[in-house]
Length: 261
Image (cartoon, rainbow, N blue to C red; front, side, top):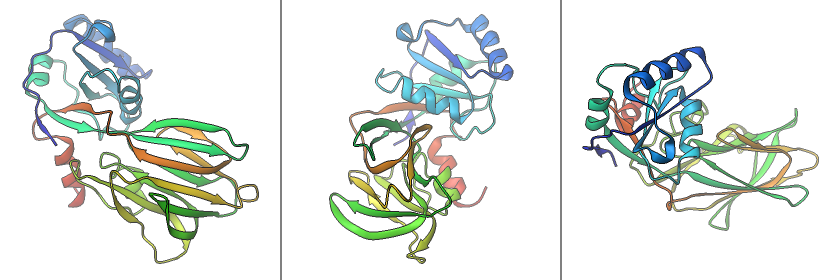
């Protein structure tokens, strides 16, 4: 749930993407406010786009430090507007949103296990021209014996307005204890549009005919190819504080998306 941060931060660590725009912002802000090592900081300020923010969330997800982003990239849904002035005042007045990541364990056709975290979504995709054939289980119980589609995804509330929305999935308020399970270009069953699940549910997607119809699993940006199954669950033991300017909080942005502006 979003709430005022109400804290003054003096030791700021800046991280930035490799774009000239972000690098220039880093130089200006570091000269003005200082730039301490992340381990010694009170807060992390990320400069870039949503890709950089997702990387920063994963990098510091166990640090306990709040993260505040400023938009110096392409897509900035998870970022605040960039301004050089009054940064410390903005940080003190910011609204906090707690976010939890998804934990993905993907097992490939050779039996090897791969583990990754995702803050937006975990997706499975067909790797070739043939549609994927998938079996879906919730908490170990079969709910869909066969989904023929380009793939499927499991999205967090924070990620529900990203790829999930493009795949016609539902927008979820940031403080709702839900996950979106959304098919990607479903062919059979043609009318299935996905499901809303409790955020404590465990989702298993098994790949049918994995050798003939290879499938990849992606946790935000980490990809595992040729999977046989993927198990996904939200990790509530990890809670990251994301900070947003008043009036532009994450739950406000998600609410606006539902009304198309």
